Image 1 (spheres, rainbow, N blue to C red):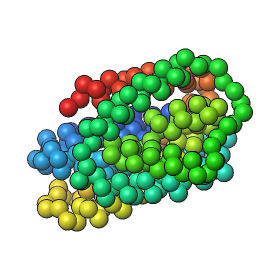
Image 2 (cartoon, one colour):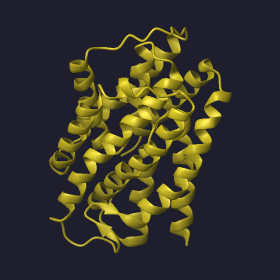
Image 3 (cartoon, rainbow, N blue to C red):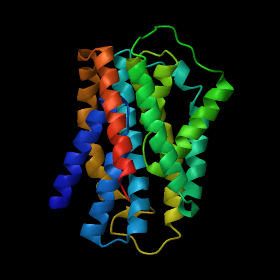
Image 4 (cartoon, rainbow, N blue to C red):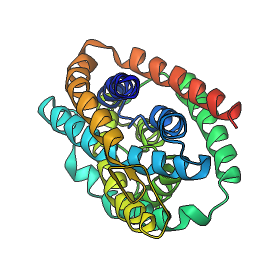
Length: 264
């Protein structure tokens, strides 16, 4: 029962973050689910971490899907822009899911920490907003999508902490940036899910009700609660000013950077 309560509450927070800020919540799910698998199921740390990352990425398919649906209804979505990034995003997560078990992530971890601090500073320094959308060509869009998806797969996140600042930097309205990030998170989850399920079949015993590196009870509990709150949060976004949304995201980036800096 304790495990159920922990995962349900975590899913509620993840859904709120997904709808409000366009992030998948992996930076919450991965450490929490790793702890749950070790403490309640005696899974080794390395295997628990991979299962937490795999499960986190699949939850993003559902939370991102619901967030995208509500953002589309609220006119916070532009699928013509999203389609420029989808192929690269899917290919990046699909490829990295097969590479991940053999990869040393220390360098990428510190690169990501530096990225969060620099991006937060960039947004904080430039509070002015322009309505003109200035996006790169399809080739560079896919290249950037591939890079973000690859890093996101390693960390177990939906890419919002990189996609939202990226779109804001390119003069996209922050609310639209959140909607775009939510939609692209779906394809990060879809691409990664194939690799995590396939790789898991070659590993030893898993907790009951697991498929490969996917822990199904965690997937169900996290997803069910997050879907409810994701829908609420997409409506709350219109009650927050653009400047306040930027400030919230800057604070979140600093907290994420600090947590990663002092972890492990």
